[in-house]
Image (cartoon, rainbow, N blue to C red; front, side, top):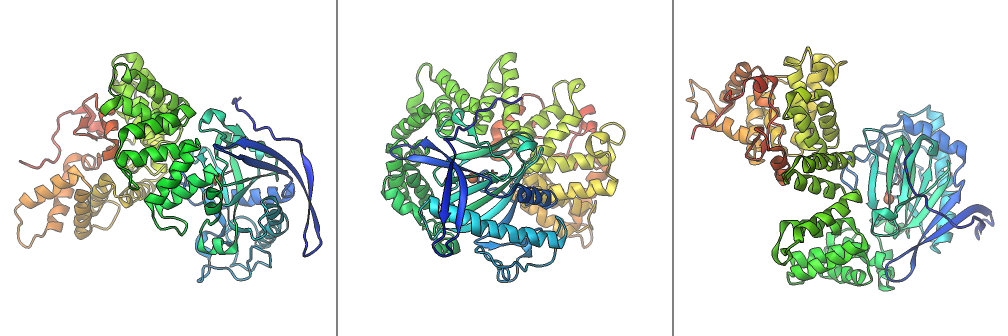
Length: 633
Ligand SMILES: O=C(O)CCC(=O)C(=O)O
Ligand SMILES: [Fe+2]
């Protein structure tokens, strides 16, 4: 049983909202809770019982279970979102069809946020056509007849409109966490519980900068939680499958059409520290119709920071560190703002203070500073700050003693469980390359590397492809079952190519190099030396040593009659393939440059070469020292 605290709402009261236009009276059962806001004011959260009928929630859930969800990067953490957009910029998308199903103007005939009959294109997955159009109709009625009247009344904003609605799913091995954030783009948000009995955890709010203040919201099927842009929240699912239905509102149809957030200006001027923070963020990034303006951003960050808004303090520290927005570089002031936020419990500030102390930069180098640094890093890591877990693991890996090493692995596992792609990959590599081959577990290694690859971590995608390709040749008896027992060879090959393509699309040097090898040698694709040459050049530009060596060798190979570079590359790749049993050229799972610490961490054994972690083949494991392709100096 997971230990979690629940948010306590005040008593339920019955609200009646009478529409002046239609004279219709609507009843809502509402409970409220007030959370502290830095400076003045409070952050309010409302729980509305039975916002939608249980039967409708169950129908939507049943259909959602059969829908396809997008893996596009989430705006909060950049990881695959597993979301399904239902309303985009105020317009309903066809229920059960993907976003590409929009018509040419990007609008759907007859679909309106304010109701109207839905006449979208034909059925997609997720139930019969009539069942789906019934869902669309009912959902649109819920928006018009339940959500909008409530939101307009609750926030005294008669012009509020729905701008976006989406379904999210949190399945094991897909997404378990939606990190703590503000819905900056929304004037207010409504989240509806669809299947509370199927999971542990769910939506939480975080009233203070510390994750220790997180409290989960208990939503029954069809209940809604309603909040404005100033409530920090996130999702954690400890077990089971969760589906949620989310609605984002803007304060006017114009704001919806132009995708702007005009409500911040007034609230910020009135002294709302969260509005100041969010406005500063939009100005810093030039979003929501604002042109990038670092001077204005800094001014709002400062006002919010002075009111005690911890994230604004962290941002202001960043401005001082880099001398942005007309500020002179001032590491002392930067550090002092970070320290403020760290004391308030902000995990990012704690991590940064910790890192500064550990790196011993400038004035922070004093007796005991490293110990203090470790303490801050630990505080942040204990708050489940993913980056802090990773940093702490890397710090401890460099420390002496088996105890530190053991603890480092525990933090690495924590970071991996929190969804960190590089930690997942590193655990996979460690399992694969373990110092003691007798205790390595290829099944577990494969699982970690797969998780990392699914998490869009390009080096893992490339390495996974290598493992799959390798499995075709070498792992048929033992390791094969770890990979893809069910799959036929062509399926394994096409999976490998897909992973390589994903890695290459992200500009991963190994992905580019390996897919270049496939084109050069004609494995799994039609042989095409020209394509291979282009890919090898891209790999060189992305920093691939192997591609550099191959091109170098190609240049030194005397061309025979009529031979051009692509042919030479084809030949080289083919001979490398033959000589090394298809394996060696693919074995290039490595760390990204910004993750060089990871290579250092892994590189205690013989597998690290100049910051590159290779996955040796079984052959290589058994025959150390066999030369690969080298560029003669
Ligand atoms: O899934 C949820 O309940 C909420 C997700 C969320 O906070 C968001 O999409 O902004
Ligand atoms: Fe959110």
